[in-house]
Amino acid sequence: MKNKLLYIFVCCFCFIGCTDETKVQSVRLEPNELTLKIGETYQIEMIINPISAIIYNPVAWRSSNPNVAQVDSKGNVTAIYAGECTITCKTKHHEDYCRVTVVAPKYDITFTNCVVFDEGMKSETNQRNLILRLYDDNLNVDSTGAMSGNGLFLNINLYAPAESEKLPAGTYRTSDTINDYTIQPGALRQEGNSYYATGSYLGQYTNNGLSALFLTEGEIIIENNGDYSVKCSFSGIQTEKVNASFDGQIDIYDTSHENKITTIEYTNSEQESIEIENEPTLNHIKITLSNNDTTVIFIARTPKSITTLPTGNYYLSTDVRAYTLIENECFIETSDKKTAIVKATMQVKENEYYGTFTDIEGNKYLIKNIKKQQIKSFVY
Image 1 (tube, rainbow, N blue to C red):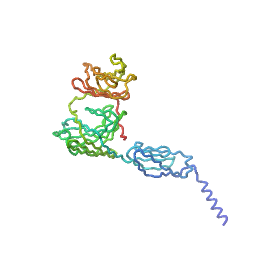
Image 2: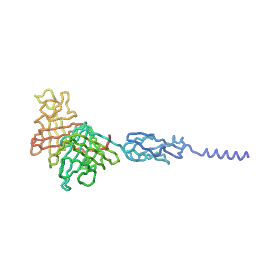
Image 3: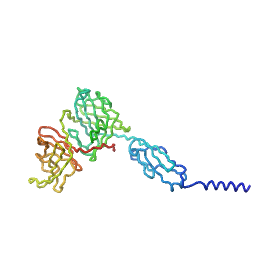
Image 4: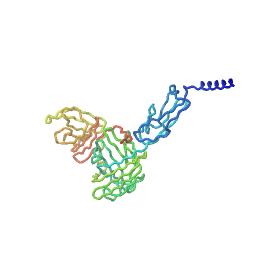
């Protein structure tokens, strides 16, 4: 009997002794499904058997889609944007997964401003094209649609009956075909090296560019009882929900005429300090913007303490004060003529210039940089 017990003891000892504590037998993640909101962080628990093997085996974490969720070397998962992805924890021979869902955001926004740009008739379908733009007080939008500032806006591409009031009341719904009371869904369009947000989208305009959330389905209800009432309800491409409203007066601008606005995209810019004797209390900066065909020239007034053109908004004015453009010193030159500008608004930011000019004949010009524009995913 004693010999038999000794045999069992020896066998057990040999079995235990044969287990290599430096090798991973299994990896398990807890939990294996996770739901987060945008911006949330959660640490996934990694369970290795035997636990001592973690000392001898490197562990790699990976996200199948870092645009949805990212993971660091300790298993901390950060939700980036709506969608689904898989977080993998892997050793040399073993791995496990956690399915992560980042829930789509919901936006409820009451806008304080609204304008409409009447783009005229769509000859192929006989509908009027209207651009409805709702925006907050942190943005400026001029009669050409040019924007400045830092804020949120909702850009909606509407189609209305040919014979109707400027902004007819009714219910407009998204559609891939152009008919009365339809809305064009949002999309990204490329022209050469430039990218443009088109159709309907929620935008965030900043000094760093444009972020856009493209809207795919939804409707707008417009009522007009002296003041307008606009109620919007949309879904985005990642099932985001966008609800927006506006109540008040709406300015409507006619932008339908062909060649009414000429866009000048400059490729080169130069700054030059100059002296103007009858304005001794200010400094003056001459700006020259040019491309192969056209040159734009204007002189800006700046405070005496500043020798380069600071960021800000400038307006053509006879007032002798800082942050204005000098009247009779603003021109657009081509190979065959030099055109005087009588009205100008210029936004300067980080050595870039964006402006709207009007010449003596009423022709309008939109000035902007020709650099490639990146449309980023929306962050709110």
